[in-house]
Length: 526
Image (cartoon, rainbow, N blue to C red):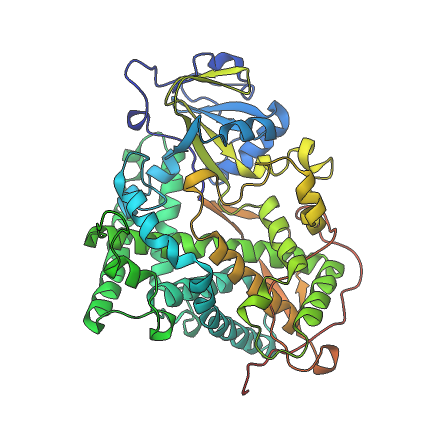
């Protein structure tokens, strides 16, 4: 999730001017031209696309710049050298920026939204970290396959009816059901619904409201939206309370198909290994909502962007399919270990997250007085927003063709040649995303599955539009499918994720014929 500001009272020592938020030489940092008194840099700015506006300004103003709106001024960092400096955990720490602070009414001091001084973060992290171990991931794998099968069943029906598939909508259903089932033993029935589950509607509502607060002159102007947000929060709370109550009534053991326990069992039953402390009921609720929201929203966006670029680059898609067919061969259902062997497929996902990191920014604050990049003084508590999407386009790192989709950027040799801290889709440091291995395994598995089963045909009239609701998602992305025929792949096969070589620029269709490889997916016993 993106962090796009701060509430100065949370982090700034007394005596700091709020306009500076810890930057004593703010005037040395460039800002957009045509600044208007009181209103700031609002000319040409869009309330709906603040991140993409900032990317545009980055191209004009350089690796560090500032923007001002309605009396609040923010510093943005995107240059690789400066971002690497801010990744130094001895000098900088996570900062809960305004976009994230706006979610605290929803999830309080949960893993993602806790301030550094709040103890519940470390408690929850230490209790839940084993839930993302290799053993835990292997237990989730069969359930991920089951949910993916529900997706392909839905897509088969859409194909048979001659309809294009709603990629972001269906990826949201997939990832919500995956985290709900693997983490909490719950089924939202998303694929049986014509409309999004009310939980998704409420979740999107809270994210959208948090984004709107970033650009509103005053929350008082959003009274109607505030009432709707309060109703959305109440619905999320009721849903999770019912889920937890049902688990307690069953006596626990809801995950891994009733086996070793899932994330909810850990929240309810596991004490901290050193202190013996347990998560409170309120903390459990907050962590469950965090995982349901963050655990599916960002992964669905990553899958949607990857599928978009795969559809535009048939040669890349064919190369990915060839790897799936070769690595899995006659395997009816891929084992957990086989997913990690799809290295080229994984590069497709990595490259999609480079161009459009679905959590597109993270904020960092100075632990003590320091100088950023040897040039910009920062006082203790001073903060800046690292624009991940800007960092991932720095030509000093990614070359003059940084806008081009090219999974070979993540070839092992290329990765070793790059400096550290140049690729940050999961955040940085101790507060980086706890579930990143879960998301990568799920997304790789699903991409492989879909590539092995379908040819992806883009809508020729579609041009990429990115919607922002703290996270990023392709807007209005629909795609036509063709089923691969059994003669085009080795017997039965189950898919995973997809890799790619070079492709078309962002938002631009690639020319050339598509691959003729097609193949159905069967589960053992089908």
